[in-house]
Length: 435
Image 1 (cartoon, rainbow, N blue to C red):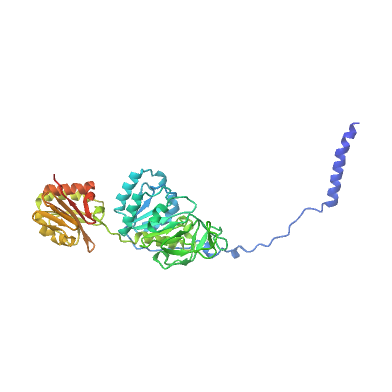
Image 2: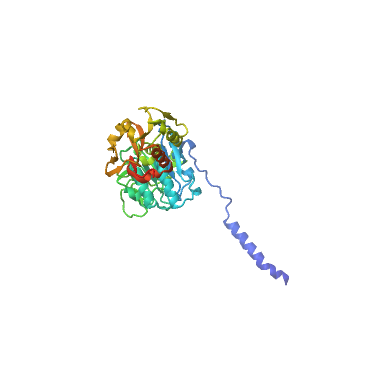
């Protein structure tokens, strides 16, 4: 009976063997595929890395980079821009530490640092800030721009942030979308090309730029517009979409992408030229300095002149206050009209500095001092600080009734307390100085 157990397996094997014998025609051998010569395979020119060389003019400026608003970027992402700045002789400073990940400041600390560092900065750069700018910070940056400072705003649609808390103050709004093009792109529908530019130094020499995660923005002066095949992720119909624009003053610039600022994305199309233009924008301004910016309006060698021997101790203290690496600070008996100067004098010596007082509308009488838009004050116990700027030269004037008054003015300069009693941008008046 045991042989009956083998019947079913044997029948199955026989059926399978019959099927193979009837259907198998041998091993499949595919036909050869033609292969084009490698030398005939070429990418479009705009996808190939482009050579770029420049010989920039040296501009001894300072660019302040924001790292104190939980900024959502890594320094390597913008390394090419920083190298372009250094090539121009520009100093890169930070609002915090060089990396956003290492910067932890309270709002009060952040505002105090911002106000202090803007006094010597020529431009301010913020990149995808996650923390909103406070109204006080916005006011500080608005005053900075009014003085001629440059402001560059860099956003990224894939990194949620609070950049509009600052941008809106200058009439600029980042839309929060991303742009895409399904017809012509750099290998991904979000790698968008731009070829339509408004005439501007920022767009000079550009024929095509490639932005890799770009969003749109609105600005008083758009500088680049997408073509009719580029659309927004939050709009159904075609609109003229701008990734780049200036504010009404021309001193604030906004860009809806930052990926092109680092390797290897800088090498595509005219991106390197675009980055060089951005570096020129940041370093191309001429900002005005006011008395509140002391001591940073002195950017070269300085003389300290004491009108009489009794003021020599205050002159020495002033020289120490102004001492900086690579800056020469001399104590002089007479004014050199070719050098920046700090002039210490008593009201009795006002004749030596009358050519600075008169243009500022300052009148020192026998018993009172009159300055514009302020009631006359008693001369006794009062001090005066005046900044005069003309012909590229800056003169800081300290006047008081006696040597103790001059000592008190120098102490206020050192502590920063002089800023609390400014009459205008160039003049401070200090009643009750020696009480």
